[in-house]
Amino acid sequence: MRVASGNARLGWYRVREGPFATVTADGNNGHFEITTRAGVLCCIASDGGGWDHVSVHVRRADGSCRVPSWAEMVFVKELFWESDEWVVQYHPAAAEYINVHAHVLHLWKPQGVDLPTPPGYMV
Image (cartoon, rainbow, N blue to C red):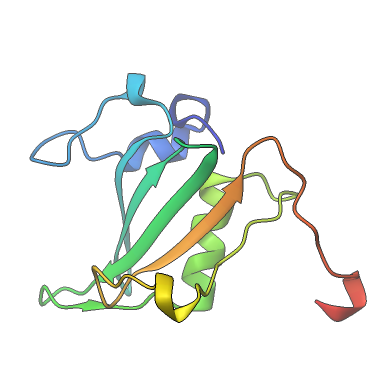
């Protein structure tokens, strides 16, 4: 995952005030908000425990939330990772499922491990 200071666009979106504020020195960890015509992409990024992780939901102008679209998730993936990196969304076993926020999707990438990937014609 890119370090925020290494990606100028990502640095613009870092939340620097309030209860979720972080600074550039926090690297990949922090709260980022990207304003789009469709709402604000709210992203929380972390790189601890051997995983790069970004959670994403969309806050509408009226304050309500919704699940991000495929295009929005692609935009977030390209913002936090390089275009040639593979990143996954997991669907956990029912016994492991925890739903803290009903409108959040997650992107994951293990660190130092090549993800198994299907052949290109299957994607």
